[in-house]
Image (tube, rainbow, N blue to C red; front, side, top):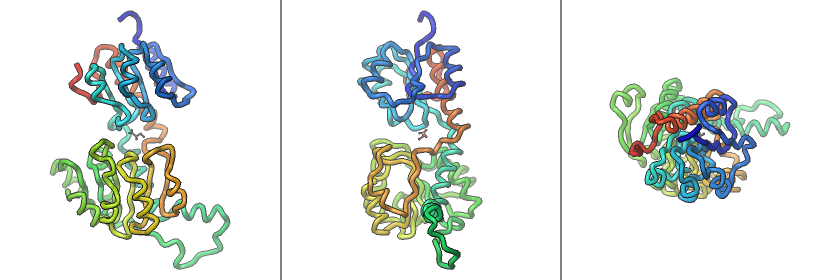
Length: 325
Ligand code: DGY
C-alpha cells in the first residue's frame, strides 16, 4: 500500500480520536454528524480501507460491494447487529467492537432505570415541575422497594455481571438466565444462580435484559413472557430494541399486568411507538447506556485503535470475526 490507508469515520468523534487516526491514516470524517443515508455511506466508503462507524450505520452487502478495498469495519459500540458480519467475513473484512470500556457505565444506566421506574422519578418530576405539588401526604406517590427484592438478569455477560455486582449493596436475591451457565466461581462471587427464562420471569421483581440482539433474541420478551411476569414486576431494557416486542409491552403496561418499565432502547428508534408516550409507568431514555464523557471517549478511541491495528498489519484487540486472516 502506498501512503497512508484511507479511513471513513461515519459520525462525529472526539478530537483525540481524529488526531490518533490522523497519525496513521488519511481520514474523512462526518464531523457535522448528519446520519448518512445508505447511498451516501456507500459513496463515501468507496476507495477506503477502513470504516469507523456507529450503531446507526447499516454495514451491509451494498456498502461492502461499493468498497472493494475495505479491510476493517470498526464499530463504536459493543453491539454489532448493524453489521452483516457474515458478509464481511466472506470478503475477508475484519469487524471490531468496543467491549469492556462501557460495562460499568451501561450497568449504571440499567440501575438508573431500575431505581427511576421503582420510585417513579420521571413521573413525580413532571408533577413537581407542573406546580401540582401541594404538600406531603402519607399515601403519596408510593413506589416499589428495590432493596431485598429479587433481580433477574437475562444475559450474564460482562455488563450483566456488572449489574449483578451492584445488587449486593441492595441486599437483593439475584437470578440469571443465559444460554450457557457462567463459571461457578463467578456465580458464587456474584451470589447468583441460573434459572430458566420462565422461572426468572415468574420469580423476579425486576427483570433486566442484557442479551445482544440477533435473530435468536428477536422478541425474546413478547406477550407470553410478559404474562409470566409478576403483576408488581418492573422490566428494564438497556440492551437493544427488538429484544422486546414493544406492542406487547405497551399492552402489558396499559393493562397493568406488569407494574412499570424502564427503557433505553426501542424497536424502531429513534422513532418511539406512540403508545409509550401515553403511559406514566414507563421511564424513557434515548439510548444513552454508555453515554458518559469518559466512556464515550474510551469507546471512540478503542474503535480507532482497532482500525489502526487492522490497517497497519496487526491483529485488532477486539476482532469479532476471528476467522478472518
Ligand atoms: C453499544 O455499545 O452497543 C451501546 O448500545 C452503545 O451505547
